[in-house]
Amino acid sequence: MSEALTRILDYARAFSEKIDRCRTTPVNATDWEDAYNRLNRFRERYRHEKSYLDPAEAQALCKVFEEDTFIKEMLDIRQIGEHAHKRVESAIRLMTNAPIPICVKTSALGFFNAPIVKLPDITGQSTPSINHLQNRTKAENRIQAALTRATDKQP
Image (tube, rainbow, N blue to C red; front, side, top):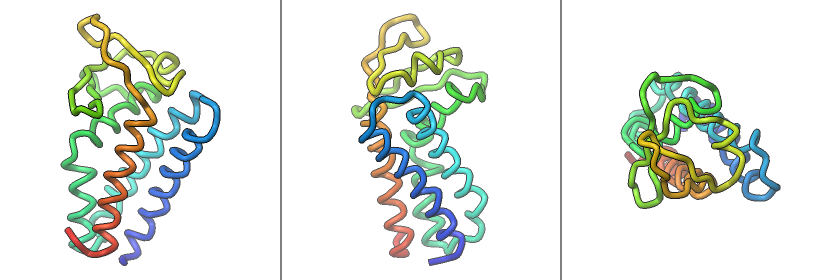
């Protein structure tokens, strides 16, 4: 295992620990928002370290952080809490992979105040429910599979 991957794994643990906290403690909007922020910091650490990864490690993590649409959209959620506007509408995927467009001006309070939220989309229509824990668990599983491939040196 490369030193770069070892450093990346610290961020993976921080992300997983926050998801575990969200699973086991009463709803706290700050924790829910922080889980998305930790996912972003994890991806940023990958971006910083990727040129130092072994080829198999880099390929495995590239698949999840650069090619996986679901993960990209989970990372876009950060703009809701951090007001880091991309100046374009975001979308997140449900467990069915159906995209839900989210308005740039979506309120962090409304978005993170419950484990399952229902928000209007950009057309003003009601969207299906967004289950934060289910989506973050799906993200965690995809990332964990990539990390397993990286540590086992399988692309």
